[in-house]
Length: 594
Image 1 (cartoon, rainbow, N blue to C red):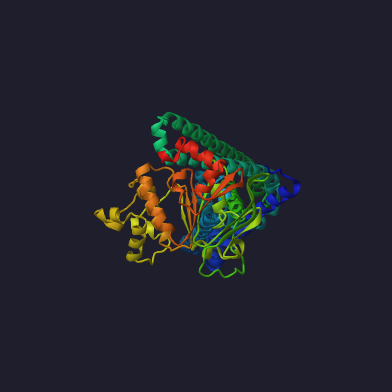
Image 2 (cartoon, helix red, strand yellow):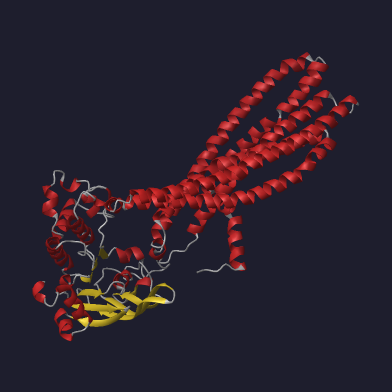
């Protein structure tokens, strides 16, 4: 468990301060439109500032001085003013949304791409719903920050400063008296900002938890219905939903209280100015038009400050979302291609493990000093009890993980020194759970190889023993498999997964528990497909069912992360060790029951 220290706290604070800088950096490709949008914002703000000054002219020059020329001019000025404001507002809204949407789209792509490349160690330790929440909910809130909140912040800030300038010009003494209350307003806003940011983190965490509950329930809908636990899942959802509601309402409470307090403070200041300014008009120190304009500016000043209180809330929510997004982007990828990779070329298929140690949790090794040399074209089975490290061992070959110490070599090259894509293109993997993507059978077999011909797809299907079934379907290879391949049986999905692996003509083939969930008849069919797929390839077979490994060239027995035994089926049976005991347990005393 990580313990926070002052250095890490300072680092976290530095990251928070740099959120805006990182967002500006993300907007750099669109800076021309960004600055044009900012220009439109300032024009719109200038148009917001002028009306109270025109009101002064109406009172002093038209109503009191009876200036007809001014009376004839003012309507045209008002129309021109608000026409300009309308055009500028349209410009900054369109341009800023265009920039903001592009920035958010880029961040969403970066986040998705980063998650795709993240360490499996990290991904398997997270709830999928929480990660989905980062891409959907957090990015949506960030979108509001860069399209709406920043626009309001710039426009209202410029309007506020412009109005303050006019107030100082009309009567600087009254302005200073008015702004004596500003420190109180700033303190209130500062405390509210800190509170709202914390609330924003809580809201997003609860929303991520809600998404995770929904995803888990629907991903395991068959289990839920099998065990009749719909009420249990509803209770979990209700609890998470209620916690999310409480977090949101807490934020609403803080925001509503903030708006009310700020408004009371400003109205109190307005009442004082009305009393003092009225006295100056009576004494002839201020014209009626100037007092009306001054009060008008104060009245209009309430709007930017009110917007600021709303912006503070939305900004803190947006910054909380940005914190979460950038925190995820800042997590380094565990396995990356080197800057200058060693050329790999066409593999022969030799795989070597040299003193490999690996652990998911520091201090709890899964693999201990593993040393193996697998010849090109050799079929190697890896067996052992659950948790012995079988799948972990073969996961090191395509660099799903890197060893803590030691090295894994392919054709004599350390896999950490070669290009990841070049390495993985020559390794075929058939997982225990043969997940298929939504799309056609042809799409799933040729997954990642869109240029593949139908002949090549058909050849892979024949190798996997599934071609006859596919061609018997009304739409053949264009048949849709449904979400996760639910329209196909387990054996059919497994054979399509084998076809997907061999269509790339890999030099190394990894079959990870490929028949563990199949019945005996289907297992024989898949086993035949596996035998055809392994022909001429270096193959690793991970298996609990020992009937699937007896024809391997070599069997590696792992026990507590170490190579305990090694040999052929006959040799290991004769040795009477771990393999022999596992075999006896499975077949109840002899090969005759196989």
